[in-house]
Image 1 (cartoon, rainbow, N blue to C red):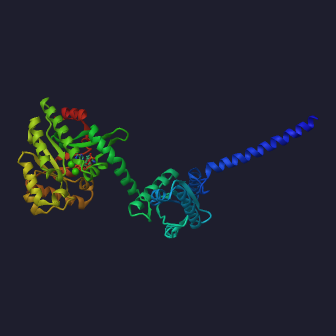
Image 2 (spheres, rainbow, N blue to C red; image 1 turned 180 degrees about the vertical axis):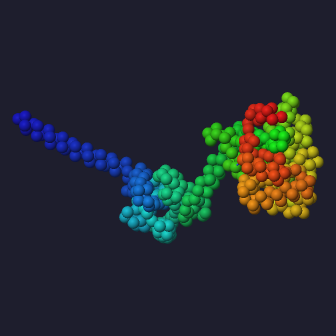
Image 3 (cartoon, rainbow, N blue to C red; image 1 turned 90 degrees about the vertical axis):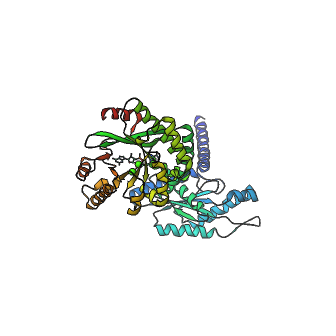
Length: 456
Ligand code: C2E
Ligand code: CA
Ligand code: CA
């Protein structure tokens, strides 16, 4: 009796286990496959991509993903309805599966987004598969007697070149896909790192840069300029920093060009000018010898009447002595339109403000214009300073610039001086105005004040 009961119980447990196993299986299926197309879903895709990356790593191979996004799917959905949209997605999934080989993983990420993992293919093979997909999609798909044209924009990224992890590869393929869309859809793009920079700059930086101006997230740093003979400070260059609430201090290289492109630079420059002039004026009133304050401005601003008015107003409001004020303008900007620069810079000079030609040596100055330009100072570009002590070509350029400055009766200063060797070379050539990490990095206001007090 007991044995019989036991047996029955065993059967029951077995049945239950089988049932559970089946349930788990179908749950697992649901969790890993897309119910509409039967293709692997995002979770399984990421799993498989991670596997492919591991395999590629150990075998010194590559793994490539195609990120495919249907063009105008929303329009199709809106025109023909969701039912047709779903059928289209199913058809497209079939077509993709036919284009891929058995060992490739075709997955549906969701919506109208698909991915394909290609393992260890050459660039040519990847291009061939991608082209085949684009070709196949040129044929209309017939659903409910409607001919529907659905094309793909495709972004491609590869391990190891475009990323080490599944998430980064996916993100980069997505970025490349957007580039394909930008280029007119129905096309493909291989990822390159420039795209990320651009995408980052455009999307994130643009909106947060606008906010930064409203919320006053900019900070002024001051880099001392030194007379190396006396060790005294002759002035400083005001350099903008962006104190981003999440990114921390963002250097200007990462946002000045964008700010110029989208027309925000004038706000930044106006703010910098006001803030730096206020600070220097305050120091002067405390009896501190500040030397000359140099500000970076673009030529474009100076051609703007309002900007000049702004400078005039600041000078007047702060009662700022303009002999302590200098503007740094790059050589290449001046030489873009030297005739107009002569006119514009004369207006600045008439206010008693000095003009320094920044990044000198990189901008192909013509000597005839240099003679006519109302300038006070040449700033030798750091690219030549770097190796001049050991590279004869760079040394020759530095010597020519110094000779040029002397014959035009201009001052000259070396920027980017980091080492004793560079300094020694400059001393031998008779250049004693120095800016660079050798003396000091750009400093926040309070540290700059201390520096001034120590080196007065
Ligand atoms: P720049 O005018 O050539 O400024 C000099 C750059 O060299 C600064 O970079 C400075 O930090 C860096 N530097 C100084 N000494 C050394 C050194 O010894 N070694 C090296 N490797 N670098 C040194 P920063 O602050 O990143 O500024 C980059 C550029 O951004 C500036 O180049 C300037 O063109 C622009 N910029 C900075 N502030 C402003 C601003 O307020 N307005 C505008 N329009 N442009 C600005
Ligand atoms: Ca500068
Ligand atoms: Ca410079």
